[in-house]
Image 1 (spheres, one colour):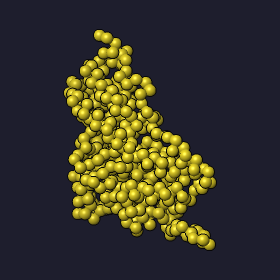
Image 2 (cartoon, helix red, strand yellow):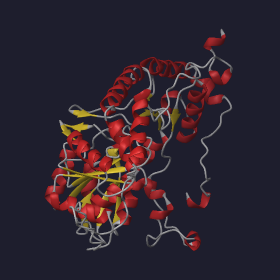
Image 3 (tube, one colour):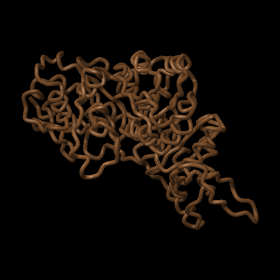
Image 4 (cartoon, helix red, strand yellow):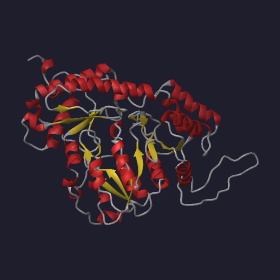
Length: 444
């Protein structure tokens, strides 16, 4: 056996050479110039800052929304959307069991209760059939997440919302530029929320964008984001009233962040196009490999491919151990071959302690001493299975949208190499996935 036939974990040459990946965010001279422009202007803050106002106008044109409010995080945008849509304390909001914790956490910020729903394993998005079963007299909204940039089943969800008089708030944090039957995501419900976090396809370090087509909803969101105040731009001779009409936060975004987002927005379509081209290479190559299931995009939908989640079937390799050990062995072998791969989330959201106490509350030292209610993975079988039988290609620092198609072809080659010698992978020494900080066993 020549060395090139050996797995990297056996001493062979990695398929993907060191230095092959491009890092994210992709910072170009225009981004430097945008930041310098703000510093030179001396205008660094304010609800009506030049860069913030321009970003809102430009993203409105890009997203198709009539109103855009730039805020300091995607979580803030979700909070604004929930409150502005009329979600009240004590209400229930249906959310997927698979997402980032910001989705249900924003529901808690609004004083409501997140009700977790299982996902459709073919899309990783909330399952509308399961969602309708969870509707009660206290349900006021459904919050679909366009997971990995793939739009949720909005027709089915809108039908449910219409039947039960519910608001739809779209968590589009991962889905800039994605479309559902030609409609831009974020604009199909009462309101939508996007993230400008450094990992996202539209990256500005941190930040968020609230969007809506309803003027009243926009006004309510803007008040929440700026201390409960109305904040028209003062005319000559006028000063700010400092008159709060309700509870509000300081969710204002920084002028430098807005300037960087504007610069990146000019390249968003190109980044998304590269992500889709890379996803096509991966899907074509992985579809023919035994036991590997690439993500699918239903007809009429366009994904931003913020992440590319690959599923696998351990049973097809004769594996009789746990799914998580198989996953960890596979990950270990892929990383050794130079493939950028991660798990992202390891547990369904309802497993997290914040959602398992008798009442939701902010953390303080004594909170850790309160008992946790048990949670049942059997309530979310598809979410649990997917998280144990999948991983993500293209993690935050090395995502699809800035890689070459040659690197993607090498990814496929790495899969072929590993699957061909899966027996060695399953018998070799490996390093299990480690999390930090470690999760106490009694909390699992």
